[in-house]
Image (tube, rainbow, N blue to C red; front, side):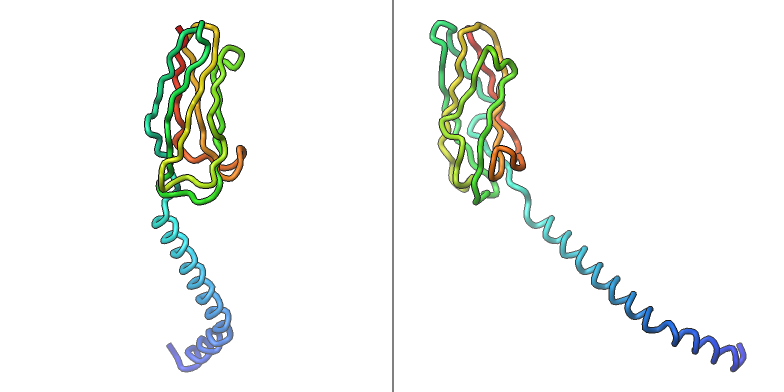
Length: 153
C-alpha cells in the first residue's frame, strides 16, 4: 500500500472513530444488562405451592350432603405478599367447593391452615380445583393447583 493510500485510509477511519466508540460503548452496556437479567432470573426461582396432600379426595353420602377435609399449604420459596385462593368445579350446578379462608397475608415459609368443604345432594364423582393467585383473584397463578376429587355416594 502506498503512503498516499495509507493517509486516505487513516483519514476515513478517524472520521468515523467517534461513531465506532459510541457503538462499542452501547454494545457493552447492552451486554452487561442482558447478563445481569440472566443472572437474576437464574438465581431467584418463582414460588411454587406445596400442598400437604395433592390430589385430595372428599367422600360423603348424598343424604349427608356435605363433608370437609383439611389440606394446609405453603409456598417455596416463600411469597411474602397477599395470596388469594379460588375454587372451581366441573359441574357447578351439582356440586360446590369452598375454602375456609380465601385470602392470606403471605404464602410460606410455614403452612397456612386450610379446610375444604364440598357440598352436593346428587350422587356422582366430580372434580374441583383450588388455585393460589398473587395479590388478587385475577393475579398471576402460583402453580400447582390443588386437584380435589369429590365422591358423592
